[in-house]
Image (cartoon, rainbow, N blue to C red; front, side):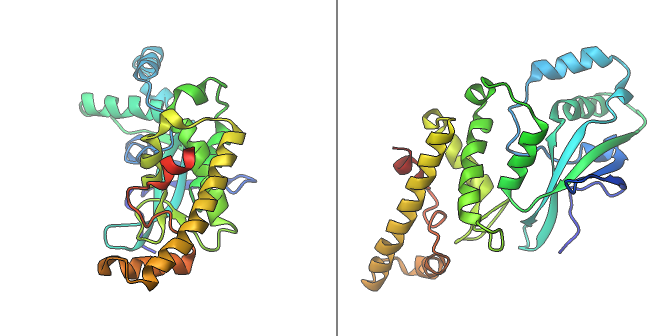
Length: 259
């Protein structure tokens, strides 16, 4: 596995927690190189301004409280790399970015971050939920938090024991489904997504049924030579994996299963 390109290069491990996360020391400039996790809340610019006003010129007060997740993704060369994402602390990181972008010759300083290695988006979302005590109404007003519920449930269902990940972080090749692409597709239908556990569970049940039915349908099409030749190798891999959610790149199954 290649060295990650977005993980601080000078971090120092200080402590390992019971949940496997580690407390690490890095620097502010290294921290802000890490991208924000896509499942995070929408950035609240008003909150960023509040933080800026509260700390004034004491930028070094933003030296802790950052949480980072790491998981394997494919890079542009189709090699597995360990990618890092800020999963909590994005508003403070935004203040740091603006500080270093608008001031000259400002010295770097040490910061602490908690880093958690996860396998997939379900584990990332679970970690996010443990460190964020969201108000009930937040699920209704932030699209990303609603979508997280659906991604978590779908990933848990189809990834099963985690030995064979059908829904994977970052870039993927079919038959595997990118959780990033899944997030983008679900956000297109966010007005139809209901946040209750029952609604999410019912959606997952309909997706499982759709996947089963579609497997039978495409096998019939394949036997009748009713599939474009260029799609046949991908379809055969999808059938072998018993997973067709990524085969149609338009993800038409999402609105079909929303009912």
